[in-house]
Figure: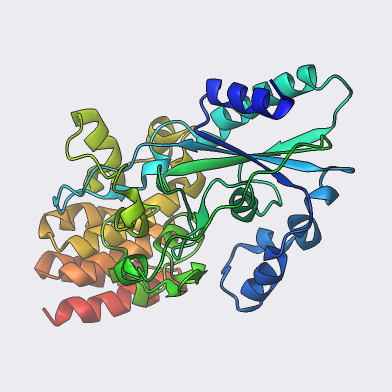
Length: 372
């Protein structure tokens, strides 16, 4: 068995679903990345502007690098929406333990195997979407799939629900044939995006993407985009759910009570979480990244979109939250829901609010609620 075949077999044993090899030559995507950043489409993700030279040239990460081993590990698609207005939606990738932790451990074990089997001293590094690596372009070059019009990596057999990892090494290993674009004339992902984040095929304006708004964005969600967020409170799977290539891994129709509670939690219950309760529920999961204030900001938006006035008491209480970000978005939700209780609470909060941004939200919300 060749070393490449042995590596492939060991990777599958460790739980990876796809393995491919490509050269460590410079990537054409570095030019696209630079132009994408110039357009401002990265929003507040300033870290993407760092180490542009290294992102485009894997050999700068590992001196003497010859090969990139690309790996994919699939995850279970989300359950379909329950339609319950009192429940939010969390992206399927964020359910369960933080994937960075267990994927890095698998890569560490695979690297140990490679080092033992190589027959010489080898050098390498591995990444799970945190390093300066253009992982989707590398995965395409390694034959793991193609970059779809929704910008996700898509495999014709397993779809796009997968985590990616890479090992850069100075070993010389034979490359695989690159993936072939099979999106054809389909534009379902572009049509499904409620915030029009996919401004053209293969082109994402992250500033409008629900996943960016609920995970990466640290401040207030632009008012014109809040309605489009619907019930999503962390991440978004809409452009994957409509993709024909995900039919084989389509959303399950049923799930346990625990699975449904995790994927579609009660919005009012989340809005009542204090810091300790947030940490207990979401610590060591991807949701922890957005912190309590970020999650509750999105929860308030989802409650405003739900149109259910039974949430008004919880939102009124949120007007007293320690975080201005939460107070401001709770005000927006109350403005959307309207009613006497909402109007009275907004007026009272406006009289006592000291944060200018929150005061502005309260004033606008009060005007909205008064039209009811």
